[in-house]
Image (cartoon, rainbow, N blue to C red; front, side, top):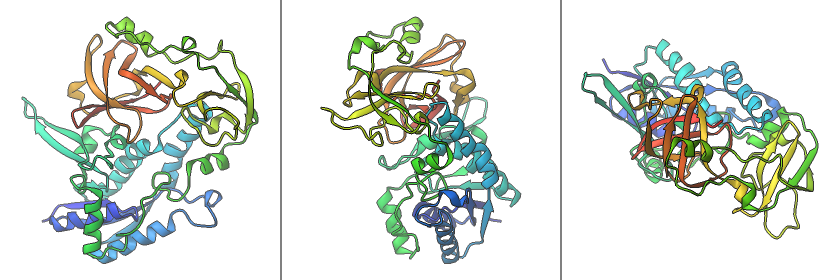
Length: 396
């Protein structure tokens, strides 16, 4: 009997081709569309953010001749993703709902639903790859590898998966380039072959994050202030980080309480903004564009600096508390007092950069070879060995 795979059909070309490839490999394929949100208050121009995608997913299933179901996960999505997002933004942090959606929805709730359908695996259209090997004791170790297309590698979005989740996951298009995926879709006549990639929230669709936040979080007028580009005011550790004590200093965030500022405008709520943001301030007349370097949701104040090289935009390191550290490869977990060099990134599509990890009793210090722009609390930092994602954590 063929093994059964449940594919998360999003209504896009990637998951459509993933389902086709699995079918070609001899799997018994079932398509499921996840209905994660249906709050009409956040639709745009009277467009429904999910019905079009659901219809496209159904058309793909019909074209391939596979069973199709719609699974309503809106209650779980609100509890695990949307409420989390609001809490984080209200605290002035920068959450990544796509990372959480994969950990909490696609490879947890959705995976359990697939198991109820007697599925052996779940599959998605992510551009990443999976491998495995056996250790000295014969235990199978699963590896999360970067996608073959460097422009589409989505391993960062899966940086919170566990060994158990990986053991039941398939990524059928991870070895392909995006143009190859579209070509396959055209060759077999898939209705999603020319469909543009979604730019909205994870499995919500056309809804844009700023629109979503502004319709869900109440506006609150406050000051936009500018801070001087005086490097002496900010802790950018430019000396070699040789000791654990050095790492503690290098990972400290900038302190703005004693930095001189001048008011340059007003905003509608500090919780709408994030570090590194340029657009949306509505403040002009400066020699260089203003970038957000800090937000204070307690005082409802947004701090800005002129130019993309403003020292307050950069940090040498970051800290992740123990409760927020996750190892995809538990066999490589650092013990207190250990340190190791990996490659790291703090956002999707960022180039991997050299970093050293220092494990202390309280958590993990990640120190970059060069200062990094836009490090914000709430983001996920992920670390890699070559093209393998080893672990990740939430920046304090």
